[in-house]
Length: 303
Length: 316
Image (cartoon, rainbow over all chains, first blue to last red; front, side, top):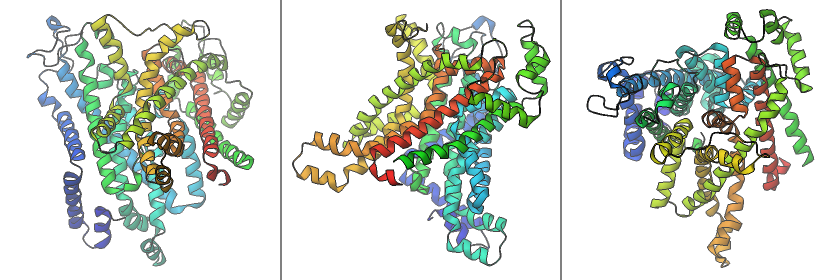
């Protein structure tokens, strides 16, 4: 593990804050210099994040504000991306859709990564029957296709923003624990971990102080790849009518339901939500790939 | 070879058991008021009352006993009865499974026909404009949601040329041409999105193989480049690709749900969606169990094909 974050944290146990910041800066510098495309992806993703954050201020109209005299109008200066069958401004709805997508992405990718880390570290560090039991469960869990599992889970807990975040976190968290476990297995045989253990350090201390910093690159890559996956999964669920219920402006929802019948009259309705979705997922994937190449060459090609 | 097979088969049994546990106990998580909701949704339907639903879900007996009864039934091919239609779940699945199977097979075919030649091309012409183009395309295919692609294919040809993909399902044996005409568009879309990863994998593997000594030897012998690529490189490079195609089965099944919904194909995906919207839990758990078994079997087949293609793994 020669990753900057890891080596910085390991070399100066007394003041981990300043070197950590330097490591982040170094990583950002390498990203821009060695992987300009990945850096561009990060910028595009940040722009979407900003759109989501400022949706309320940027959107010219309210999300459910109807203009009955202007139903199904093509894009114009008044309605940048046209209007839908109820006379709602598509541009405003796409902006607010970005907000929903970003909320789901950050929360679900974040929680799922935490779940992966906890499960993966415990499984990899303790080994034995804990590991066996966890891994057999993960095996069985991964048998189910992601979307199918999500659909089944929604059938039990019902649709809604909170439910979706929880389910996505569980789905990707459990599946991702494999990756963290593998990394933790590699670290736990290292001399410094053994030294800490033989000095009588408690397991939680060793995990927190030695194992976690050294699997951090893997965790970071995991988090970024999850962002794209989670956005796509939420959109797929909303498309199937199992996501955040209408009239919430989800990108997936805008492409399904009532809107579909009107797309033949107003084809612009079919463009903006899908294009936004593709752009943000493309950007975050490119960024994730670049990050993986920089931090963890061994993970290349795994998705 | 036989011990290898046997060991893999045995290793699948605990996984299958845990799969059945997950499927079974997930249904127990249904909150009680959902049953009231189910009754309200279907009040005029069949005179179903609360007790009947609870009995059909097996909620009227102790948990462990329920599981044993359910598992015993499943082993005999009895997955219970649909809550709203008086048909056995197994019969419904038997009717829908071949349709999804056909869609999946066609999609896989499209994916391979598309991904392997392009992946090989990309590897041979590494770092040329063509290579960059195909790699960007594969990255793009990973980002485009299938349902958007499907929507575009439905909407724009109809707006521009007054043509839309057919949406009427015809059984294959009734009219193969009509059946394939209906399946063609969704299978192609599904195959294209699958091909993204396969293409990347083919390229990576070919690059690795092309650097090997035996390729240099083959070239030094004076073999034509075509023979070197197809006979020597491709055959070795494809082994991991086969594994990957198998590992993509879950992605394929997930994507099929979306395509079946858009193109009105009455397969397992549509069955699952219908069941979810009607809260028909016996059907949902049945579909889950069958999907789980299907994926496990595919994994097993992948292991087997791996052993056949690469003799080194046979003894492992």
